[in-house]
Image 1 (cartoon, rainbow, N blue to C red):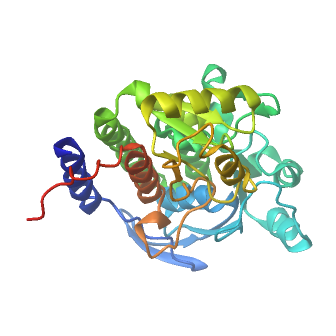
Image 2 (cartoon, rainbow, N blue to C red):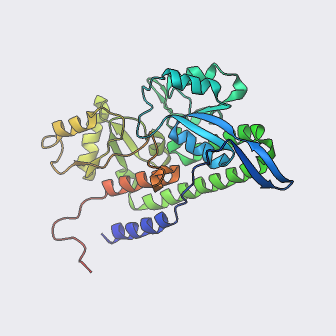
Image 3 (cartoon, rainbow, N blue to C red):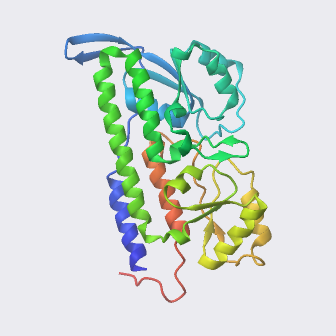
Length: 321
């Protein structure tokens, strides 16, 4: 228990240090005080697939871009169908930025109808050997590994600097800042997870959205919709006394909940419960820490750690101060 409360103290301290990134201003023209004096900068209109992508564009070029995400709010991009308004926005944007790797196929098709100089696929520069293959193709959710997201940062920076040459220096500075933040986030996460032995890092769910996170931080991700992985999940939950399984918001169609209901009390202990949903497909409210990638990532790490910590036995709770 001392280890657990030590983790809580560390997490609280790190949370206070979180950088809340402010969204870009929505203005058609910015008058900027630059090295050469005042200069009118035409705002670049950028259309993205998701709020995750939009946040990255804003972090690199805030003040110089007007960003619109096709899938906004707490809406899943999985299976999303474009409407006429979406297609018009993609066709008329100055630049189209998207994750690729099969995420939102209709968006990708519409984007690829544009000239190659008018679109950026964030995952284009990730080494192929670092991608996770599935029966349905390559897993597209690479952004759950901060080290892979840095490839997207560098690739997008090059494209933005070409479009916004007069402020290329500021965009480059933002690239350095964002990558430093991602490197710090990676080290921070590794440190927080030290209290959970690798053999107990079991992420039981009903999808593969967090597959890159699992690979980066030595979790075994088990998708209970697969019969073999379901059996292994039961075995590891029993062995490790894992207290929770992990739904992911916007995906799964309740398969994990049904699996737990069917197995609990027979193949699984009655004590096994559902953790609060992880969020891996969209950002939270822009006024909250989870409205940024780093804030959301930290929230997911906290949910995982709390969900994997064994509950204290009766009578062994920490004494009240």
